[in-house]
Image (tube, rainbow, N blue to C red; front, top):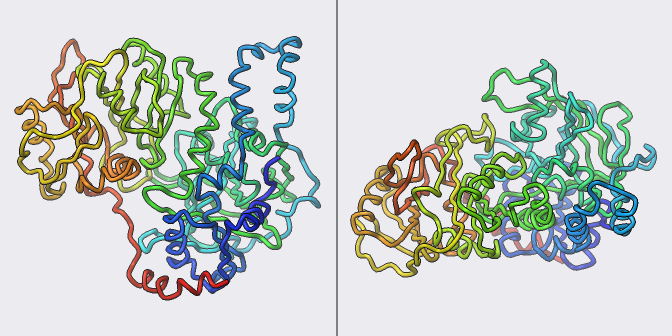
Length: 574
């Protein structure tokens, strides 16, 4: 059985010498996040800050910041169980006593999943209730000067459908604290809580929302997972935990609360006055343990702390993608490419037409559809080897028939999200069947006007850099013409601000390209229309330069860097 609450996990980290306790006074505004970022970059220990300015609560960060830590937290049992479920699906559906007997061990394990109600006296989360200024004592962790305020960064946002109460959502949606009783929620309007909010808005009602902080690590994992329509989020948490999830009724009414949570916020999100307005939670009360610990995470690009947790969950859920879409053998989203970045699927060996049908099924699946670029190949390859996946596609794709760009109808993020140059769009690149070209691996085609850096990323994919977007927005247009004029052998060219930095690692490539990429605006190629079908011609150029309106990379201010430099040895005194 897994760890029953976050403090059990912290204690295990202490025993494993994977925890650094910082007793020195630390300011949650900029100082604490900078300490965290430095430790995460070195794959250092989890951190427990016991003396945080402005709050009575200790703050724990980097709890899942390495692959070793994630494996230790959850083990192999959940993955083995889901593989068994996927393998037994044909046997158990439809259920019958003889078939269930054949899979009796699996059935027994599945019967252990779900929730169990516990008495209020056995729920530590009900230790303290605060209804006046309920957010005032929470640690105001602020990562950057330009962040817009403090955030709750590991919130488990729980909502229920008002039209079908048996449906629920548990998601990791950041909350920006506005004042002592309100917080802005960053959720996807087209999934889970966002859909339930739309339902409530249509009825002119506020949506009841609960936010849990802490609890079993399995609960945090379930909230981080991609939505799985066939597997309710609390059931997934129970499956990862290895036992029924203990829940307690809120004495003041409303949603039940995980009994082992550290904090539980209860409130309402009223209808918005305009589509571009962010949803705002009006917090009515907060429950917390008498000795609550506040878990948090801090953004670290390109590979954040939760990278390992998200990838674990993808690996955990990968056996069941084939059940949802039989033609999909494997599916992966690349965490380092940012929210809604790059996804890849290995599909059954098929014609391009059948592969396109599979792509449409993926794009139509709310759980799988949230990436700007979807690569499809029929050639097996490890998703951890992006160059191999990309080469499989580039060897096979026909630009006239295998590249599809879908405009502003794409449903990737929030209508209220700022920092986008234009409406969301998506693209699909198919590469199935036999190889049709040999990919170049070294560049020997001469000087490209306006380009000062040319570096291959992998076979067939070239990274180049020249003037910035603000200096020369038309550079990709001329680049396409130049490459076509010299009959370039490179099918894909990525225009970046700094090619050498972009190709340095797989993580840097994913982050640099796909956080600055909107397909409908940033894909350049010659094209023609035949039989109402838009067909492209090689090469394809992607403009992945930083553009006006895109969120700039954040950097710590000099005063924060100096402060942390001065105090570094004091933080880690034994």
